[in-house]
Length: 228
Image (cartoon, rainbow, N blue to C red; front, top):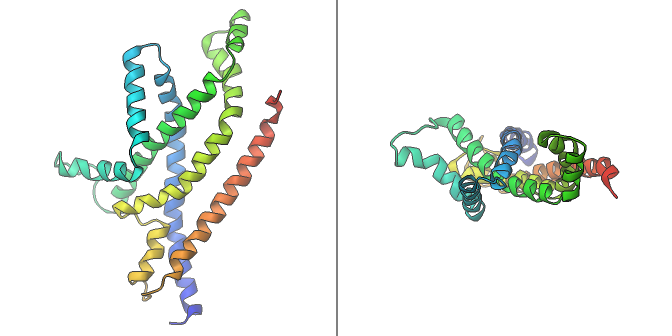
């Protein structure tokens, strides 16, 4: 099979793999962004048991490799509880991957949120109280807007890292874009012994990361009205 004949076959398979990567990326963001804010509130709680429990969970998740978390979450129920809750097939692998990624990134996002919230001057809270605003109103009308300005740069770094981290899901045989590219080394669609499709997967990551970089730059420019 000539190179010209291989091109449509390879990029067709890579497109399918990338859609799985994109799906995992989107599901992770949808779940981890709000969960991270909830965890941040827990880590700042005045209720000591909740605060220390939350901070311990964050410490464990941030201190261990995401690859290890994927393996434990996917295999632990079946091997230890004798109850493979994720089911079989690609759907089960995707669900386990999504849970692992959401938990992992929610813990990272929680620390970014916490830093953003705590960086808002105390005088802002006091001014809101003087105006007769409730805690919820102070948070959503004063703290949240200023926090967003502060967390966008570190948050954008984590989100771009997430693009590349999705490749770790292949450790539990989720067929994302790198899995699809590597398959042509072993034999796939009548093609074997070819390494160039694996390098071609880098194009997908570069383009996706580039688009996100431009998007976050635009967001930062929109938020410049908070600049003193």
